[in-house]
Image 1 (cartoon, one colour):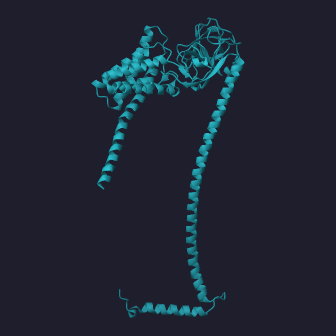
Image 2: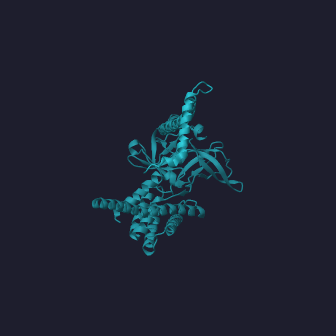
Image 3: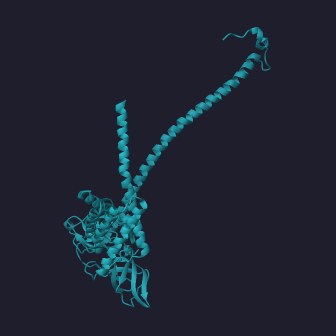
Amino acid sequence: MNALKVLLGVVLALVLQTLLSRFLVHGRLGVDLVLVVVTYLGLTSGPVVGLFAGTIGGLAQDALSTGIIGIGSLAKTIVGFISGIIGTQFIVSQPIPRFVVFVAASIVQIGVVMSLEALLELRSLARTYPLTLLEAAGNGLVGTVLFQLSDLLPRAIERRKTARGGVRVSRLRE
Amino acid sequence: MALPDIRERAGYLFLAVAVGHIVLISAQVNSRSGIPLLQAVVFGAFSQVQRVAASVVGSGQAIWRNYVDLRNVRAENVELRRREAELQVKLQQQRSQVEATVRLQQLLDLREQSGLATTGAQVIAGSATPDFRTVTIDKGRRDGVRANTAVLAAPGIVGCVVTASRGTAKVQLLVDRNAGIAGLVERSRAQGIVLGTGEDLLRMEYLAATADVKQGDVVLSSGIDGIYPKGFTIGRVERVERAGTAIKAAYVRPAVDFAALEEVLVVQGSQPTQPGVNRAEGGK
């Protein structure tokens, strides 16, 4: 996967996140599309791409927020890298393992951000374990659906192409 | 196929001849009604056939008519549904226009009442991350929008501009965990600092331990922070947190519904206004 595609994926996630924020964020809970895309890219394209996507996406999010620039991006870089390693070391091709990876990625990100905020004595969000798990599950669900769709879409296109090719061949034969 | 020998079918022959006779006789005999019997019998029999035929044809016609009517009804139904959908869309558009007009009227009223130099702006995007609460507006430096200026809506204070580019600006909402505003309780004039929590409620801290704060109290901006003009509604106290008898903090429900924010006013000057100028709207 080239850098442009990674960049496009991250930018698309960021645009969707800002446009759909009123649907994606409710109270303390929210779906982080950038995190989902970073984890997805890490799993499918390896640690380098995951790292790159995490850095770009995290920096952009930090720049568009009101917090310290770098905290979110560091968390996402770690997440992208680790998910890249998981993607290369393990076979993550079923929905449940994918869901678990996305949930774990969300928890790792929240953990890193909270740790850094505590370290820097910044005002942190009052998180509870159930809400953190619920948020991670939301990200996991969105990520798993994205993964399944990205699996199904090329196959569907291929089947359609094959079907069209078959029709052409039969017409030629006629 | 060879015709059967008529001689072998004598009974049939007899029957045919007998019927012929009866027909012949009846043709010459009148019925009680004065109509020849043959005519009466033939008519009686044929009328039944006609009745059945008429019934069948009538039913067929009725079925056909119903079918045609149904087709028309179907077409008419489709047309009516289409028109209904169109009308629904028009109704929604009109409702939306009415709502927009009301919102804009409220903003205009607010602008006139406050006496502040403001510029209207539209919210064009939300937060980039769920951890922080910001929105992007479609006005920037080009329109006189500067960092650290207050952003208002008809119900109350929205937040403040944190970054302004040429054509857009980033607004930190009051609910953002890094947001803070100097506030006072309208009823008792108790002062404190209202802080964003990243959640739906704001937390009013630094209140005097003996401050008079009750659930339902309206909290206004006090203006001492130098960013927000004085007297604008922040929200209503939803609950009070106490440590023994002393007040620790008060949780304030913001007056503005941030999820439904569309149009805002960005303050361009920093002229403080009279307290409670927008109480009628914001205190609702």
